[in-house]
Each structure stands twice: as structure tokens, then as C-alpha cells.
Length: 501
Ligand SMILES: NC(=O)c1ccc[n+]([C@@H]2O[C@H](COP(=O)([O-])OP(=O)(O)OC[C@H]3O[C@@H](n4cnc5c(N)ncnc54)[C@H](O)[C@@H]3O)[C@@H](O)[C@H]2O)c1
Image 1 (cartoon, rainbow, N blue to C red):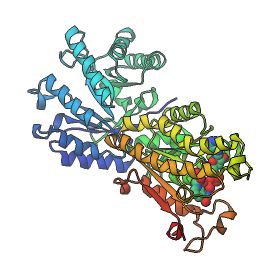
Image 2 (tube, protein in one colour):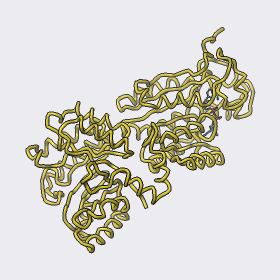
Image 3 (cartoon, helix red, strand yellow):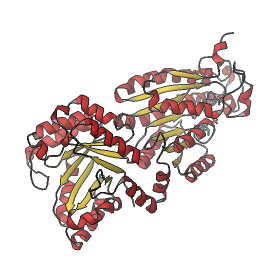
Image 4 (cartoon, rainbow, N blue to C red):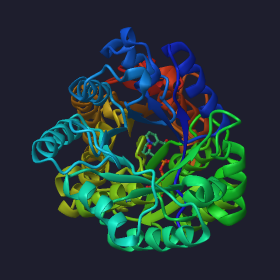
């Protein structure tokens, strides 16, 4: 049984200020997303600038923008509505709702007028090109039998949308039972996610939890006490009782990274391991990636025991297929990728136990040094970045080293790779900037992930504690660092100040 995320409904707001207040309130209560109905807004606020401000308030919740028809906006043409929806997509809305009868208003909100359908398809494509997902909605608002209902979902799907949503009514027990059978069939038959809302006199009594149970992609939570939907707290309580993972989600509902997902390579030991624990403790869902299965399983188990959301994946960062699999796993399990932290790496003479001069080093050792330290972050960035671009949010952090600027005759592939990451994050930063994706390199001096590091001298006369690096990295992922991208940050206790002496 799947339980979708909770979306607070923000409608009937005449000004962006009160709308933004409500978004923030839903976020504070633990909702995962908000439905922003532009309909209530006074028309002067239908501008790119205002929509951008409203969407900026959704930095920690998913945004779902619609512009339904109501008495308030009767005078607005469907062409104008389409323009507003495109504007929302352009400004980074996560989900944009295209009504099933846009361009041809009909009862039941699903038009088959060929011209209108063509226009819808074009709009859907344009919205998707901006990176938003399109949800097509039909507020049917009457009871329907199985076959008729399925027509709605299939028609939405055939128009090329990403999510199908239909609202039906049921007024008695029999209609309600039929709606349950329908949702089961949609679940098994429809190739895309769906939202199935069963309302009406009888359905309303159950609507509070019905969408939580029927496999719908999302569940709506209320904004006003008089609304039929459950409050965020009621819905979370319900979910907590039903599934262990939801219970974990409920416990970690506070923290800076709630609703964020981190993919962490090299997460079975050292800095990567502590980062996985600390990100999870701050509410993030974490996908731990490493080649060391045993240590990985232990880490995942510990995080889960402490109430965090975590999954493990045995993967070799040298394989692009593994990188793609990791990105797909993170999206499948947690729906987003907000942070990519590339810790997997190592000094090839130590990791391959081969302390020879470069000119005698076996080529396998040289390959290992380059592939793990340089290609690994490149592969994982390539695999994870499309999701970040789509979300219009993401931070990629590569682990460099002081060895990236201070040359030494030993481990030349390590130093060369770490230096390469400095250039790589600059390129990534430029590619990501238009999509609100940042990239940077954190380059430590000696860190106490193993005792030997204590012998590396720094002006502070000690090596760093692991937590000092992880805290720095968490700060870099925070919105407090939203202007930092493309740069390399040395966290080295002053080690490089003596460089060259
Ligand atoms: N510890 C330091 O003093 C120091 C200093 C500068 C830079 N760094 C860099 O910081 C990062 C983390 O360092 P650490 O000391 O915490 O590391 P660590 O050795 O404790 O952990 C590295 C992890 O990466 C995993 N790994 C190795 N090869 C892999 C592969 N091919 N695919 C997937 N996983 C793989 C290992 O199993 C291990 O769990 C590294 O990139 C390192 O180069 C560390």
C-alpha cells in the first residue's frame, strides 16, 4: 500500500502576502507540498515577478499550481489561464494543473473537441519543456460507473500528461464501493501516477482518509477547519499508525532538510558516513552508496533505528551504469535528488597498496586513482543533475583535497583528480546556474577519519575532527549558502598558508 505526500490547499487568497503566509504555515506543520490556486488572486498579481515570489516561498515544499475557473475569474479567458500556467512553469513550479476542458469548457471537465485537445497537447509539451510535471484534472463532480471513469484517466494519459487527477462524487454505499473498485483498477492499469478523489454526500465522510489509502500520488490536507480534508497533523497521525516508514518520517519531521533527498557516495565510512547520519537527523531522506556492503547495511540500519529515512545501494562509482541506477533508485524511493555528496575517493598508493614511483606504477593503480577520484563525481553528477534541473533545485558537492594544489611525487592520480574537481565544479556551476543548481568543491586538509592523519602538520597543530568537515558541508547545502557556487573551499586548519615554504 502506498501513501502519497500531503499537499496543503492554498486558495481564495486575494494577495500574494497571505498566500505566502499560508504556504509557510503548511510547511511548518510538515506538509510535503502545497496546491497554489491562482484563481483567488487579484489580477494585478498575475505577473512573472509575483509568481516567482510565491514559488520562492516553496523552497522546502513541492509546488502545484492551478488556475481553476470560479465566479471570481469568469472574465479570464482560457487562453489567458494557459499563459499564467506557462508563466508558473517558467518560474519553476513543480506541478502545473491543466484542466481536462481547458479551451472548451464542458460539464465534467473533459473536452474531446479536437481543436481544444490539440491546444492542450501543445501547452502540456511547453510546460514540460520548462521542467514542470503536468497534472491534468477533471472535476467530474457526479457519480460514474467503472468504464466511464476509466475513460477520464486514459484520456488524460493519452494527452501526454505526467499525472492524472479526477474527482468523482458518490452519494451512497454502493457508489462508494464502486469507487474503491475503480481506484484499484486505476492503480493496476494506468501507466502514470494518478490522484483519485471521491467526494459527494457519502464520499465526503470518507474522503478524509480515502486518498491516503487508494494509491493516489498525493493527498490533500485542509486549510480551513470547515474543509473536509484532514489537517496535516491528523493525516500524519493516520499514516504513522499505518506504516513504519511513515512513522520514521513523522519523527524526523523537524530539521533543516525535511523533504530533501541526499545521494551520498562513499557513505559507508569516514566523512560520508557521518554526513549520511547528520543529513538524516536533519530530516533528509538519504541514499547511501558504497562498495562495502556490510558497512553500508549497518549504516542504513542505524539511521533507520534513529528514525531517519535511509536506503543503501552497493555501487561502484567507477561505473556509469551504477551511477544511473543510484539516481533512479533515489527518485523511485524518495522522488527527488536535492544534494549529491561525492565522498567516495582515496589515495591510490594506500587504497591499492602499491607504493611505487609513478613510472613503475601498474596501470590498474593509475586507472583506480583517476576513475574513483575524478570519474566517480563526474558520473554521479551526470546521472543526478537532470533531476535537479527538473526540480529547479540542487547542490552538488565534490570532495577535493589540499593535495589538489600541493603536488607530491606519490599518488599523482589522487592530486591530479582532486585538482580536476576544482575545474569540474566551475563547469557544473555554469551549467547549473540557470536552473538553481549549485556545485562546489570542499577540499580538506588532514581529517581524522584514520589515525595516521594526525601526523600531517597544520598551523592549528591538529587534524580536523570529521564533524568539522561534515558541518561545513551541511552549511554549504543550506539555503544560508545560496550564493555560493563554482568555488573550492579549503578546510585545512591553515595548512596551505605554509604552502611553498
Ligand atoms: N580523510 C582525509 O584526511 C581527507 C583529506 C582530504 C580529502 N579527503 C577526501 O574526502 C573524501 C572522504 O574521505 P574519508 O577519509 O572520509 O574516506 P574513507 O576512506 O573513510 O571512505 C571512503 C569510502 O569510499 C568507499 N569507496 C571506495 N571506492 C569506492 C568505489 N569505487 N565506489 C563506491 N565507493 C567507494 C569506501 O568503501 C569507503 O567507504 C575522499 O574523497 C577523500 O579523498 C579526505
